[in-house]
Image (cartoon, rainbow, N blue to C red; front, side, top):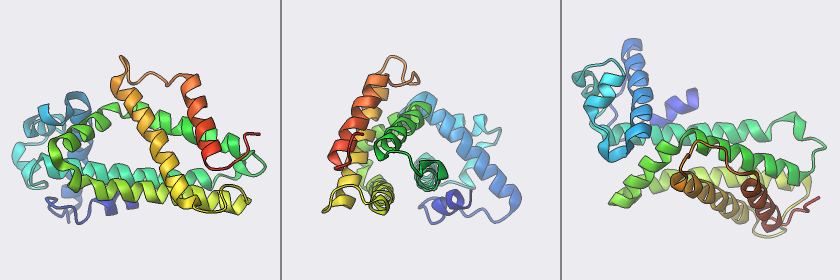
Length: 218
């Protein structure tokens, strides 16, 4: 939770919440905003919708966020912080000791698929912002999250003495980014984006990632 709170500090358009009551209202608005963006997409979501979903007044919204873009940036930063925390927890799990690396990578791909399936609306809203030309506002955070995840994976492989001997960090970043992009595209174009990704899809992506990183399949 601390990393999520830190992730929205300094975001342009966020009014600092110094009192407990104000922080609670801010958190309620962010939770409501995530739900509204997921349901309606970015363009069709309105401040009035978010305020109503949070049981707040529109004035209360504007005392904490400059506009809905500021709220969405905060949500994006929060999502990136959760991703970093998830990667930290994943690679710290003691159960991986003695588990073949290919199996660990397969579990990582399956976990990534589940996260995307739980938040298809968020990714749809993010793509709307990128297509609308807001890329420069989000690209740094996206790249930072990808780099962090890739380096965590590279460190894990190096500790095991596996993976490419050169360019492992870059390969891990690219490999994870490719897996994520494929799974997001599937969710965005699926008739039921919340439906589990087919086993053959996650299996194929796991195999691709394993081979790309120079890890034995067995």
